[in-house]
Every structure is written in C-alpha cells, then in structure tokens.
Image 1: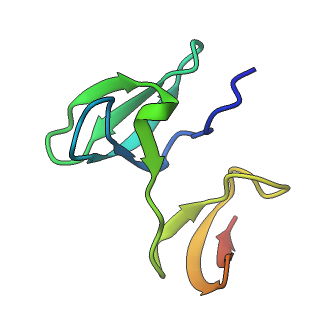
Image 2: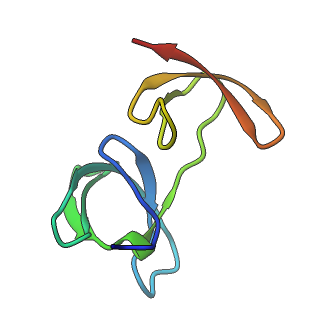
Length: 94
C-alpha cells in the first residue's frame, strides 16, 4: 500500500513536477490503478498524469467549497466557514 500523500477527485492541487521551479494549479480528476493521478491544469485545460510526490494540496480559503478527506465524513462536500487553530469549521452540504 502507498504510504505517501493521498488525493481524491475534485481536489485542488499544485502540480510542481520533479525539477520544476514553479507550480501550476490543477484539479484531480481521476485516481489511477498504479497510484498516479490524472489532473487537469487550470488555465489551459491540459490533462496530465502525475505522481503523488509531484503535487501538494491547495489550502482552502474561508467560503471556499471543500471536500472532507478523512474521517467519518470523508468524501462529503461543504463550505469552509471558519478556521480555529489547526481545526477547520465546515458547513456540510448533503
């Protein structure tokens, strides 16, 4: 089992590739069987396949739509309404 970072579809990431100096914002569209991810890059809509160590999560801002990535509510979406230290307060949408 892969012990590296875990991403899921519809999550916003910075694709930094190995050896790149600048990152590009993209959205995870598909988790592939080999542990890589298919992402769509922001400005041009280019699709590429990347490894987990070539991307980082983009931290959401207040009022952003978010997806819960762990715990009982994993996969549920909502709106980030506040931050309290390391905790995030999310109003869930069912």
